[in-house]
Length: 114
Image (cartoon, rainbow, N blue to C red; front, side, top):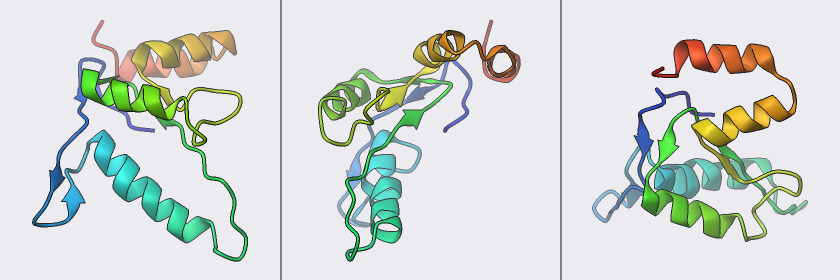
């Protein structure tokens, strides 16, 4: 989970050809670096399992990042029961569904601009 102020935008990010890495603090960093590292370390070749992910943030995603995430939501990487991403509004909605009032109050106290 990434905790940012509600008005923050998580961009898709660019890939740096010189460093051969995506920009940090972007969706590309998460997908191509963090998630890839987890797949490599956690799931051993002797016991291959399909990997799923869920990117949760208290901020918002850029339009370009949302497009990629929506595509991922229709892939094998999507968890069965939930979306593969939650932004500020969808996270609050999910927490309300499960009556998680304390968590909602924490998000409003520390991450909401209202």
